[in-house]
Amino acid sequence: MDSHRFHKIKSLSDIKLEKERLRYEQLLAENKLAENIQSVKQMASITSLFGSITSGFEFAHDIFRKIADIIALFRGPSKKKKKKKNIKTQQETEHQ
Image (cartoon, rainbow, N blue to C red):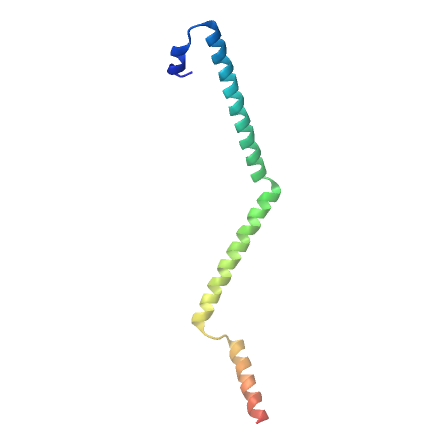
């Protein structure tokens, strides 16, 4: 009880009112706590946990793929692409 409310208490009925107000605040706090606990339980459920893990793996996979693409740009065309290009040019020269 804060001092401001304490100074307003003058009679037994004021004490009863303050007691009821405190009970009401206690119920509100308990309900809020129960809601928070329920939220934590939902976040920590098995389904949610696996969803978070999978999202993390997908994110990491995307980053590694992008890094690989950037490295490939600096290396130039791959050997397979060069080989295909050589085969195409050979076929074109044979047809002429």
